[in-house]
Length: 96
Image (cartoon, rainbow, N blue to C red; front, side, top):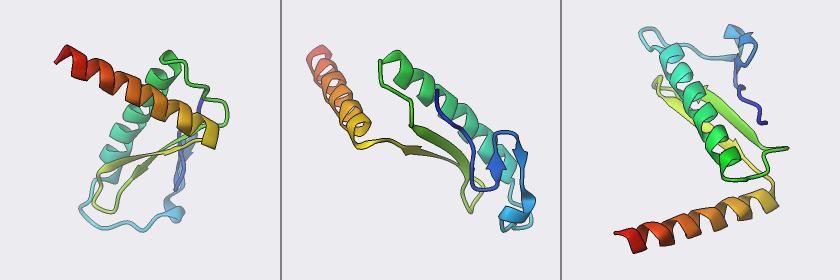
């Protein structure tokens, strides 16, 4: 499927030396939420038939502690996702 992790928060553990920490900011909560969101996005893209081989979903925590999900795709896969988004948008417009 896809890889989730990066920027000090690896899927198999945390590297505290890879990050700049600010007192009072709950980075772990944001990272945990981003990890869940990345898994949901990966599952949704897979269910939509998107080829996820070589795709990278990265859950990180922003400087303010909020969760951030980074998505890296090949050019072909990015075009496939764009087409799926256009088809979905057209269906939503018709339904509305």
